[in-house]
View 1 (tube, protein in one colour):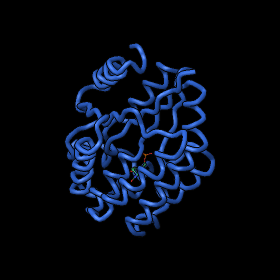
View 2 (cartoon, protein in one colour):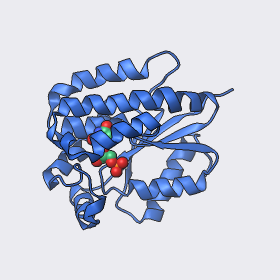
View 3 (cartoon, protein in one colour):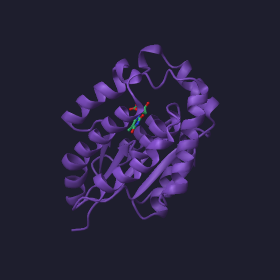
View 4 (cartoon, rainbow, N blue to C red):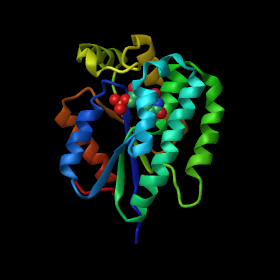
Amino acid sequence: MMQGQYIVFDGMDGSGKGTQIEFLQKKFIGTVVFTREPGGTPFAEEIRKIVRDNPLAGKSTPLNNFLLFWAAREELLHNLIVPTRKSGKHVFSDRGDSSTFAYQIYGEANNGLITPFFEMRKLVFEKAGRQPPHLYIVFDLPAEVAHSRVMAAGGSKRNHFDTRKLDYYERVRCGFRNFSAHIQNVVLVNAEGSPEAVHESVLNVLAERGILPK
Ligand code: TMP
């Protein structure tokens, strides 16, 4: 049986990624398994509560956050991504290691984590039976637009990442763009258009790559 593919959807907070994933969930219901990072399995969801939702994580070191995001990813790969791919289904993940690169390295201005990042990629993605994501679709837009969207959203929806200032968003955007310079299979989708237009672009990318017909 052909293994399913592992596709990551990523982008800054405020990039409209959540809306795009909802469109895809409606369109490909039953044919694709949707998951998210950090999270996607009971244990990884517990790590999510610590690293994403607990304000103490915002006060911890970038290295500690880096390790926690990789820990959640290891858990998700082992328990969901690898078995789903083996069953022949595609996995679409809301975020992936592209976020670690953009947030923990660029957002936190921590270049010292670049080499460990690529070592972690080897360690986690190159274990027997695993592969790194086949494709990353990154929703790209000016940092000011993403930042003002997040600021306009209700305060209760915000996490400690969302409350960062505009310069953080600028660095994160730069991180996603640089990720695409390091890793070959990254497609930047212009996320400034209407949600429907962005959805159309995503479907085109998936069809052109032979992942799913439009
Ligand atoms: P979200 O589920 O609303 O997208 O929130 C996840 C948050 O976690 C988001 O602000 C980005 C952040 N994050 C990282 O900083 N590094 C990572 O590796 C991942 C997966 C997420």
